[in-house]
Image (cartoon, rainbow, N blue to C red; front, side, top):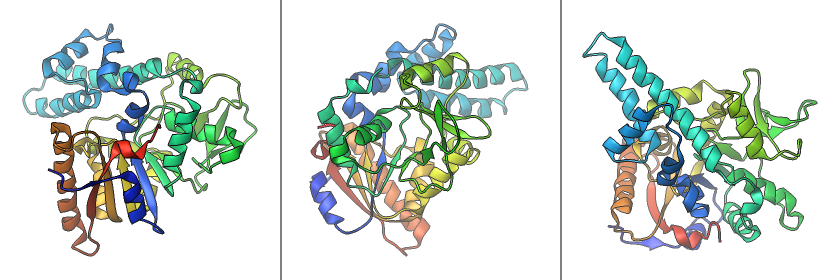
Length: 341
């Protein structure tokens, strides 16, 4: 049970004059488009026609969580190697895990809003007001909502904000911009995103302003050509970390997150072990206060899980830091942040 859930504004005031950073989880996107970004909604529209077995696995395990299934498939292949020399089953399960990752990408892209205008201007303004509290913004989401909010800031000249994601037109390129590793970015997509692609010699980001083509159409066209975005949805935290360190952009984003101190706000994330590589950085780093969003009834089973995970995070920090810097855990009311209005 949580003794004291403060408002978002009270949490901000506690950090007055100090460094503040934000980590966005899927709850950020769900708060904007619940009918799209809930895993249950994604599952309902996922296309399993080329692999009916995968749909059956979801039903057997009574879950809509794509990453959970990917993790189970990968873990099972490791276990099976101790039971059988028959590589055919192991290879099939590895193939299914890869297929499910691609199905997830395709589903998010297909369900995604087509136009930035599908988000109301008042919603963008509220989101920008929320984000303006923070020095650096990190997201674990793949969708375009944060990026659209950044672009909306450029369009609204009366309240222009500096959201720098490190991409720019450093070459004579017409249809996309490229990532500059020397750019001191303030916004990072820690697990990649639909609009960011690795083309071996450069990390590129699709844009509307350079082409006049809808961003989501460019992404869908790339997918139809079997070009997939930078997208970290590996099953275990260890596998995610391995993927991150093999990509220059993700590695830089990871190091940037690792370097932050003082105050970290977390919005819309359950502190689940799937992202233990992120949690380890929080526990072992220089952050002094973590403010965790709680949505709805603090005594719900979902929020009790968050509280349990938060306590584990604090215990981990004591183990990692040897009491050099104490990590304090606070909870704030997610609705009081008015992220989308």
